[in-house]
Image (cartoon, rainbow, N blue to C red):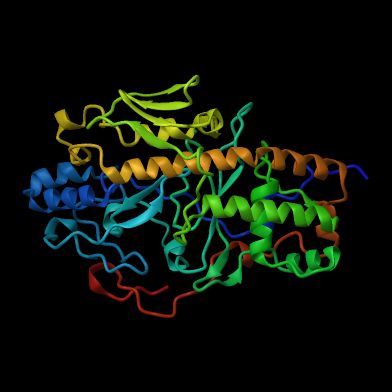
Length: 404
């Protein structure tokens, strides 16, 4: 039986129907690669007089010094106008800023134009997120990536990607899966299938298309087992929220071979030596596959480095983004070594992904027509809306309780 084509496979948006648009920060300074700089930026902001504070904020239609908004769920930020703010910086939290780039964010709703509170309400232990990547014709790279920390959904190609939490409620409750789908897959495959299996399968099998991310499904239990095993390996590399850091075997682990300069400005690659060059600093071995790893047509290592290089023109304009480490922190070197390791290990799994794609093209598909016949599609409208998860008070604007 021939496999379904890309345009016949079910859309990820139908399999995991609730999605949230990317965060829209509105200004760059509340996010950055190190938490200490964010606290220093906040301190500079609250020390400024009113005219200077207004300029530093970089006001938008959604946020000015006089805007009052509700707290971000789970974070005790202020709700009064920023014009009167004099307190300490809210403790920065980890977020994923595009693919593979964990940064820090000041979790204050007054600083973020569109923070997507519905995402923050379901964050916490057990939650995972899938983020669709921008489709760029002719480019390689994954169609979807996973995260254990809250992602901002930004695409390196500038195209927005929907964020799909695995669960609709806090604490890993109510899978964000089309009603009836897991039961149908369990029946067809002859064993239980849970939401984590579907997420793993999606990481291994998803394909980008002009109509959106599509996820071929299979009736073959052996192919399903191969795909979910591969997907769980991908998940362990992409969503490293449990402290289990990946390692390459001895002799292949990247090390700093020449000290990195205090403020590197250029990133390059020496293919003969398999060395990553940060000005005169060198890290090796770095496999070519890690150096060339792309998402949405953009090289991941290049993008990661650019976000840590000095922001062009920031100092001369006095922007808060200019407050950054005086020299390259050791923590960034550690993060870079880990990122190289992750990309190298992901690249090594690409042949397995290609073999799975071939097996799906030649195998027994579960297409959208079969899911429609089983009553799974179309998905009920309620499944595309966030669940009502409020079991505690949230402070609204000006200290009033939020009504949700």
